[in-house]
Length: 171
Image (cartoon, rainbow, N blue to C red; front, side, top):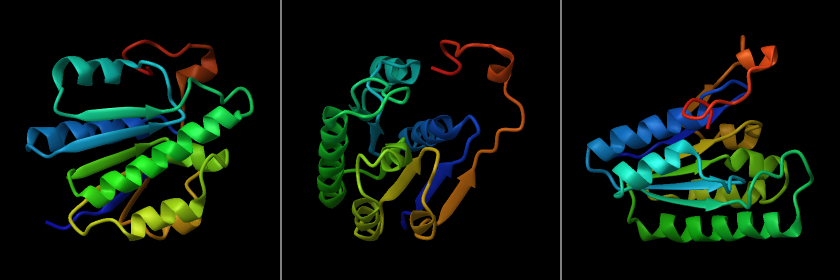
């Protein structure tokens, strides 16, 4: 089976949710899945669901919390770079059918990792590996390498009306 490169990007809600939906589908088809979450370092509801109900899915976070309101620290940079090194080894291992790089574009946007390193990862992936990259600010040079690109566009969002993120819906 041929594996493709998917991108879920844009300012709208649903990028991570789309990737996790694909994870659920792949898991139901007995595919081996690895999820790498860049920038994120907190326990979100989707992580609890995987831990409690889908232990065959592996997930690792390469973030230390949420620095988005501040500048990233050297420790944030090191966590992202270590994550990318580990992902490169996992890709080479061919142990997984689907690898998700959640919020990889945020890591790129904040210069925690390089576009060249992500480009190298994509161009050297095994032919049968399905690779999903998510996050705002997907760079054009990576979009050009993708087989499927979906841009989430915010048309209306209740957050703009003062509704805070809700457990089980946004986190």
